[in-house]
Image (cartoon, rainbow, N blue to C red; front, side, top):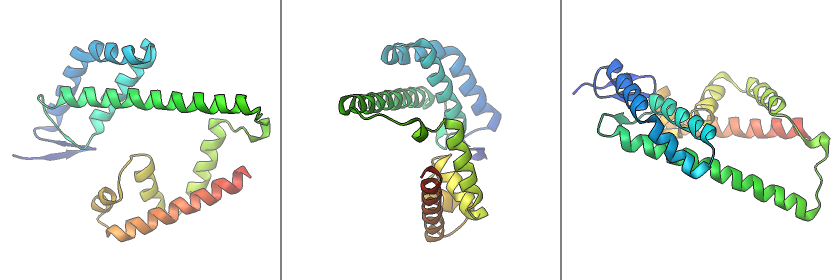
Length: 180
């Protein structure tokens, strides 16, 4: 059996074949998955966004995908994304309740917009070495673990671990200085 590496997916057949499988599954099961997500979220638009995000993740996944494994994998990804969103909502609600109950007011000078935070993060990343930046982005943006990064970059595990730790520390220090 030949295995082709396509983007982030390991495919058991021709690369175009797996995309056809996922596309066909998406077309035929999208409404059912949206209904599944809507039951938890009570918001069809958010459910549609979650299902679309799930299928984009499936296209980039590193698992073996076939007609047999796709239904379970798709439901698992949608369910995980739904529960992640619900946990996020709960954390925000608890934080808002805490602020209201303690009478803590957030001063406007301490509130940063998402755009401003992204600019700070991007400027912080420019201070990293190229190798640290690549490793940091693979870990943060793509969710890869140290072992996966070391395999992909063909580097020693300890070297990747050291560079990631250094990059994280530099980013924390930079963001702390910028927000102070």
